[in-house]
Length: 191
Image (cartoon, rainbow, N blue to C red; front, side):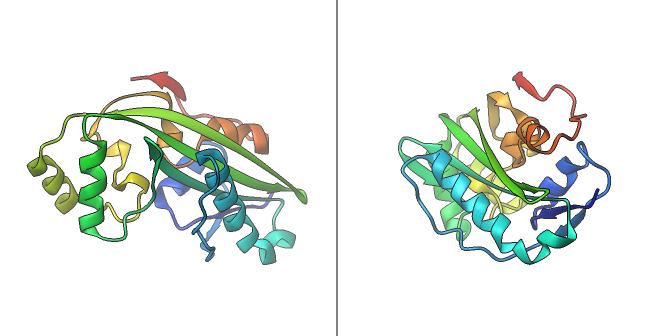
């Protein structure tokens, strides 16, 4: 079976290995400027845009996968920060609070398109300005929704739901859409 991950994300690439060992990776350009009525609608539409950006490849693959992730809190969307100043602002707003990470996967399998969304609650530690500036100066923050990576183990106090969703590719949902076995240990848990 020929599988394509339509993504530039090294994190999504690593996670997909838990479902299938053989796949190609290609990045495609898609318009990510969209805000729907709900976070679920927003991430689903953007994931679909990413999937359809890969449409020229559909005939060459049995399965094409695209995904999008955003952070949402108090009616506000947190995507990828445009610069370091925006990243500092995002992390300051998230400090000591609980937010929700939404991801959507869009899959073309044998000519049929399907989508699924996942939501995970994440609670940040209370962070000082010094903590935030140090994190921003020592981690790549500009390519991540909410300006952080849960796998860094620095900012997150706890979470409830899918860990792989927070990383950016909800494997349980993707497994359901593709039929691939999910070998990721302890997928859904509270921490």
